[in-house]
Length: 301
Image (cartoon, rainbow, N blue to C red; front, side, top):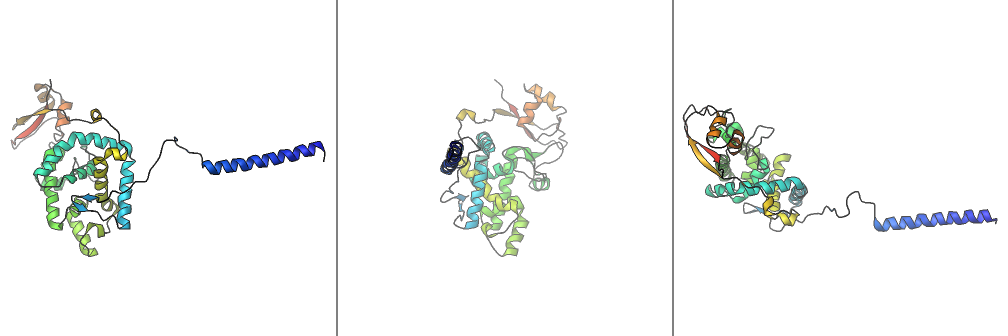
């Protein structure tokens, strides 16, 4: 064999050896990551004895376990939203919690408000508004004033009361709080019809549309995560949480022709007054019936 052929044979052998070494190395270390080395997405364990309003969730059933697992994963790894919810809860739960207790509704229902609106005065695509997402006709049926000038769906204290009334009515009809929560989403008539058609008496036995099927599980997932935030990877200091500024009440039983001018009389401005009273929808209060309204005025120092 000539020198050039011996060199060629050695080169081919070396290349083959390097190929196999590289293949073995890759099989040991695995494929290259497309994220930071420290980033991990961990499967979650469903806590033992998980419940809603004192009613056990049957996670031993495969479909129930998978639905619970889905909502825990989605709400744990939507990190920015989760942290915002924790911040807002510190601001608004102190208002909602004592009202639920006063009206005889389990504390767990504060997480229904979280699921509905994210603790924001917003509206759904169907037109349900406020923290508790009431439709206009439902709000009026339960005694709230809803028009272009005043919309009490945005009045947190009043809306919490009618949410409690609705839930208690549903609980009395269906016999448990879980079905009451489902009925808050789908409506009492629809839940009653589905129970009748499917010949069952329990939420966990019902085949429902995607939204209502996920609804209770989402509430429970939010309860679990927000009750144990550090267990789910949420890190924050007390000073990071939102707080509600102090206010005082001014009672009004007359027309307010200009809310901006009214606000200035009390040392505040239009924006600040509207932030504390989002149920005032225009720059005037018509008040033709001379109702007594309570308007929150921010306390300045």
